[in-house]
Length: 258
Ligand SMILES: Nc1ncnc2c1ncn2[C@@H]1O[C@H](COP(=O)(O)OP(=O)(O)OP(=O)(O)O)[C@@H](O)[C@H]1O
Image (cartoon, rainbow, N blue to C red):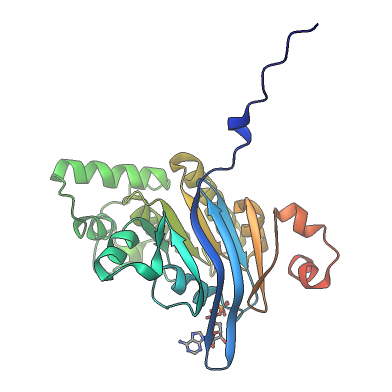
């Protein structure tokens, strides 16, 4: 009798833990049903893009995730914590583990790049020495490919560079999950492609998980491990970019046909 083959590496196929779960969430404003039984999971180390038309409820979804809007039904779990059950202080502590990259970048024009990066760091509970702070700024700027910009003012930088600085400011806090809101909006196609590449580098280097809201199909293709289509308040379809691109369903196809 042949010796029994060792069991297949079960570990390799086990899915990573969920870091963000949106479970059958509904949210309405009066009789306007924005989210209807919406379900989505982001696993550790995964980039998930939420794709939806303008006004489909992407921002409402993000606001529910970070506890700025209460859900009507269903639940949201972030890093093992039920968002609805958290008091103000606990929610603040949870938000400190999330990174945000806003469409506007939200940089302070009157501060240098270095001061912009240090601003959120100094609001944290952990104290750092000036030497540690300098090192953290240097590392974050290196990670976004802008090592020599620490003393520059945001106004001296291009749109793509400002986006990188905003990302560095997020990375310096070592977030577990990053929420990207339209990360390539307003950038020319070449810069948009560079920023999309950077999102991938960040994911690989820090093993961060990300929820990315984007309309830019190039960005979606370059950054997404999985895409969730938000249509009529529901997660209408979910899959890799390539899987969804091949679907004939007109509701799915129209996103990829443009
Ligand atoms: N606080 C609110 N009160 C009432 N209606 C709201 C509120 N916030 C959002 N809405 C409505 O919910 C719907 C979804 O809005 P949302 O901003 O989430 O869309 P979106 O997908 O992010 O759009 P865009 O891509 O244009 O930013 C819209 O019809 C909007 O008017």
